[in-house]
Length: 227
Image (cartoon, rainbow, N blue to C red; front, top):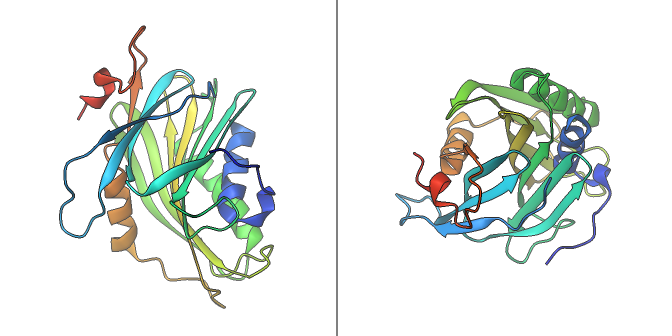
């Protein structure tokens, strides 16, 4: 069920989404395919594949997350998912996908830096960032960073927030995949646990951007079969 869109300044994740949209969907319900049983303590996941502008966007999402908001506005696309029982206003974790049609004149690192600047403006006293670096997702260039605020100054409860941000330069469009979490207020810049966020990144994999095949229906086997 889609719900009303809250104010963008209520959370840093929504700020990041807003920044992404300002750079930046043919809206479509994503296809979900069950993944094999998880290894170790990793939660069970589903493969999510959806056409967003010129490509199919694929990544893995924890099985207990559900889509609570999706919107296409002009060239911009956004979709948000939270754990079952949570909402766009009240959540502990949120996964966000954004896209902008026809965005080609940018670098993933530069785009990530712009979003990071927005985070810093929202919590200059408690801001932290950790680059996980440039990478390739299939044929697409990408950049990964973790951004953090010890206290979101604009929030009513002063919660902390961290987000794993993956910026991708698609074949003809720009995209982000984000995994955020909230926590209690911290009076100093949070320590970013590299192992934790590397594991979160691994849990999203494989993130892939596939060609749209004319006439192909969900679960999009041409993309699902890509390693």
